[in-house]
Every structure is written in structure tokens, then in C-alpha cells.
Length: 82
Length: 274
Image (cartoon, rainbow over all chains, first blue to last red):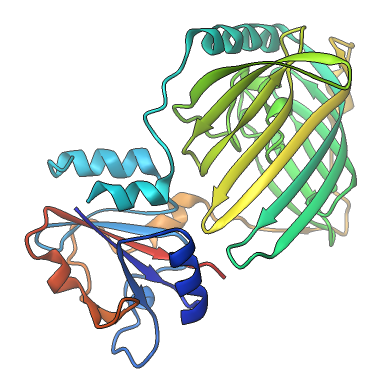
């Protein structure tokens, strides 16, 4: 499984500091900075955190506002991911 | 790759121990047997943000609770709420600025939100819940601790719903959990909550009529969207996730198509520190 964390609109400095302090090792994407897509708009994100779980083909299998760990684990189990 | 996911969602796999479970069972029995409870509640809440800012808030309230779902919590200090009231049908939260929310109260009083004042919330369910949400909490017996002349049994609790939390419940000799220290992770923020009940009176006769409540005539009602309503607005399950190519913090791009390669699943998490 891969986790991609996309930031809403914090400044790069805030993101860097926060990621460093927490030793996050997953992929972090930032908004703005000349990017073509505004991912939060595309994904209709109105509240944070919002989570989308995708299968191997990129299809949405589960999504929720908030971080419902049990529900995410249950959805992962269905995809046969430990 | 599970490691980095765990970093975000906190600890898991902690075991419940028998002593803690037995104590919490006693608390549940005692709480459920109680017909009414009046007490003073003092709470402090400190929020720590990653850039080192601290915000703190103190709240003081008087509490009047009656089974199965009647409540009147009057705040005399603090900016969170002025009154939380349940007349058995509706739950009102009157906020500063003369605005209020109105929802149906659960038959068992579970949604009577005492913010993070679990000791008050436990009157209704008997169980420790965070904001009325029950999660599979891990519990550990810590030992005895005397605070202001009362010897408490201290139980460590931690869970993940609705936010990752970890803290201590202090169980008084009469088997009521009357004190709580809790750390809650809300997004990137860490919130430290202490709540204490004092002047506790159990089973004082309180009439149902005494819980009748109407918000001030000039108060403005606030509509609160539910989580389901938020979720409904998201992209539907079964649809293809939009492609994205964003600047990666580590340099280069984060591209969905690239990330998907060779993976059984990808969790796309949108976060915002603010």
C-alpha cells in the first residue's frame, strides 16, 4: 500500500517543518507552485482530513471526511492488503 | 510500507489488562445505576500546534444530568458554549454570539456532548467515549494516585475514534471516573484536555420539568452538516480517481499514475495544518 498525503494550502515552510518534526516518510504533495491540477478541487475536498482509498486501477473504493482508521482498515482488507 | 501510515494514526496493538477492565466495568455499573448527577465541571484545554504556538482555554460549568437523556450544563466561564441543554427530545447548544444548534437527542443520551468532559458523558453510557463515539479503546491499569486528598485508581485509555487519543481516567473510591487527562490529536494539532468534576451529588431528586429549555427568542439557529452530508459531496465510490501531478516535498512530482504502479492500494490523504 502507498500513502500519498496532499496538503491543502499550507506554505512550503510550514509543511517542511511539520514533516521533519514528525519524521514522515511517505510522499507529500503540495498545492500551488505552478501545478496544473488543484487536486483538492478535483477531489471535492471541503474539510480536512479527507481520505480516498484507491484500488490498483485507480478506482475509488472508499472515501471519508475524517480519519476513520477502522473503516479504512476494513476497506483495505477487502482489497486483500494487510 | 505500513510504518508510515502508523505514524499518522498513532499507536495500536496495546493490550487491555484485566485490572483495568474490571475497574471500568465497575465504573459502568455504578454510572448506569445512578439516576441523577449534579456537579461542577472545570476543564482546561491547551492546543499545541507544530510551529510551537499554544492556545489555552478554561471552562467552568455547572452540570445537572438525569437518566435517560436529560441534561442542563450551564457554562459560567469559557468561550465554547453558554448552555448545553436536553429536554429529552431535543439537544440545544447555545454558543457565544447568541447562536445555537438544535439536534434530536439520543434516547440513551449518548450524543449529549460535554465536549471532552468524559466524566460527565460517562453518566449516560457508563463507558468512556470521546465526543460520544465509541472506539475499541486500549486500557491499562497504571496504579493509585492521590490528588487533593482523594485516592484514585488510574487507568490509561487510548483509542482512535473520532480522533487518536491517549490519556488517563481517574476513578474515585466510589467507582466514578471523575477526573480525566487526555491528549487528542486533531489533524496536525495536539490538544491537551483536563476535566474534573467536583461537588458531586448523586441521585438528588430532579424533575423532568426542570429540564424544559427554550433558546433565547433572539438567538439564531445554526445548521450543522453531518459527516454523511460531507461524505455525500465527495467523489462517488466506483468512479476513477482524478489524475494529479503535484510538486513533491522531496522534489520532483507526485503523480497518481506513477504512485499506482505495482500497488494493491493507494490512500490519498488530504491534510491541512492551517
